[in-house]
Length: 297
Image (cartoon, rainbow, N blue to C red):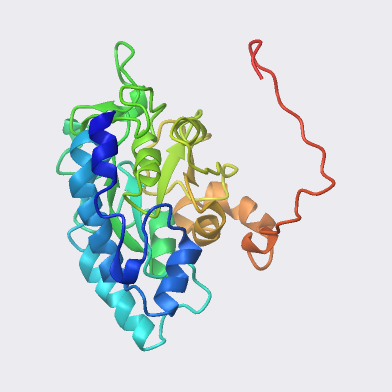
């Protein structure tokens, strides 16, 4: 634990005293708009943080060799005012669970040596949508190997051959929980702004809870499953781990690569997206309840 804490104080300040500690998409966009930060500087801050923290946390599996080039392009677009005017994700770095394909010359392996060298020739549906709004693909996040579904015996959450044992950033050796653990750990440790995981049964919800970050598990069909290593074609969902609404707006919608699921769900996406419901008074007057399961609340 003391090793992690001592490393966390490194590189807490960026350009013009911009802090990447708990930075949100909106605070990053304000820094961009006020010329206090560039996408390239932000990528370099996160890469430096990954270099310092990842030997202990083991949550970032692979760095995109094109990440800095993508950041430079986002900066160029911002200077020329040619970027998507309504995109909160423009120039923002993010990690993808290593089951989500990209055409950035990175492996997509479900963190298994069996698929090492599997470089996919096209983006997954959700990646294509994010790339279209100018997001920077920083790299791949670790997970429990093969979602732990191929193990002959139970393996620890966050364990894999390629990346080793991922660590909870708050309590060393504590359970990081389920397969999207690398996505949650990376956000919790401020190694990236936002990340994408996937869920069949608790793999978005549980890692976010255990690593203290915000998460949203979309309804099946709201996000495309095309280009994602599957467990269950009827139940798998791609979902956000932090800055949930802005990222959700960028990845929902119809995808011809997964038309069976997305064609019906796309009809229920609200006009103007989901960020319109970010209202400080939105829960006033609402009734809330807690579900009890196995004697626990």
